[in-house]
Image 1 (cartoon, rainbow, N blue to C red):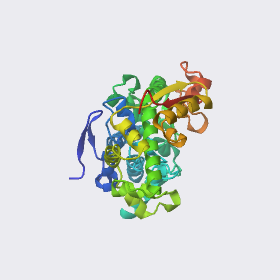
Image 2 (image 1 turned 90 degrees about the vertical axis):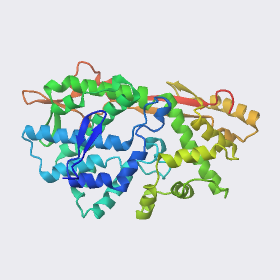
Image 3 (image 1 turned 90 degrees about the horizontal axis):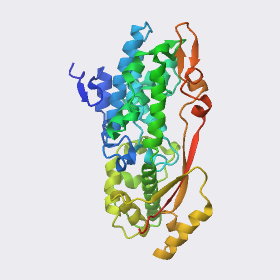
Image 4 (image 1 turned 180 degrees about the horizontal axis):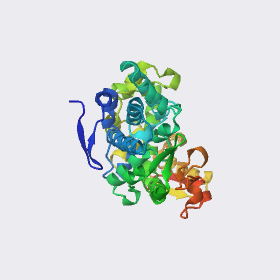
Length: 406
């Protein structure tokens, strides 16, 4: 009974840990690391309250999954005890593979390895440690479990991950437009032919959910200041690796040093590498930035100073691709002013693109169950949305360069 703890959450109030296995997983060092990984990366430079963590988010997801299980059982959907625990474990550990600053450094610390792939590696290692009690959860996480609705609850367009992060991120950023009524949405869920559906009376809640997600992406997650801060952080890593490869010593933590010295791909991700990765968190990066802002290297020093003291590059958003001559003009100016090479100047002058798709049709759609028994996609029945506009990816382009001086 000592393991059925109650946690106090600012979003949902009291959250109960459902069983001993979930408690033991929360207590594990792999999961405790998430207390030191921010949910929204560099967004705190735009929204000062956005310091909440992946730990809080994962616990919130488990709470929502408990509500789902209650609602579906009330509607006579059979969910066994084993399946229930597997759902809790899968949603608890879905983000365990995130590196420092969440998405900001994905693919940078390790070579083309996504956080989902690292999450799976952590889950498989924990499965060995916990006598194969995570096998079913891993199946659900991978989307391989035959009962499709369970996979959709962990990873889908109306999953508990989104249901928590939209509500939580909107709360901590103070952006009220992103707030959704996750309890109402959950109450409207049902299952037909082992696939997730939303009952007809929940259609407006779904519309609000999709609108909130679209708003949060363009106004918060893809905010231009957040974008430039993330890009600077990626470039800090790139420069630090270059310096180490030249044989110049660089001061940092042991765990971070290992990943700066090695290019780790998925095939090299053995248990030793996984444990080293588990030692990495936001504090390694922040401490390194604070140290490197005094490094003798011009590029590294200035990049770190920009992030630590929030003296970021200027960023301009465009609807069309940035012309090469625009970039070259800013590069030439920097080269002349600071007597640096064009390659070094490119750390401070660059372009890129961001894109987002509000809603995906076909297999991943949100389906509405009518009282007549008919099932239709939300994009076909909503009078609020133009399906073509809703499902079309929107791409924006940006250029970054120094405001006046470095």
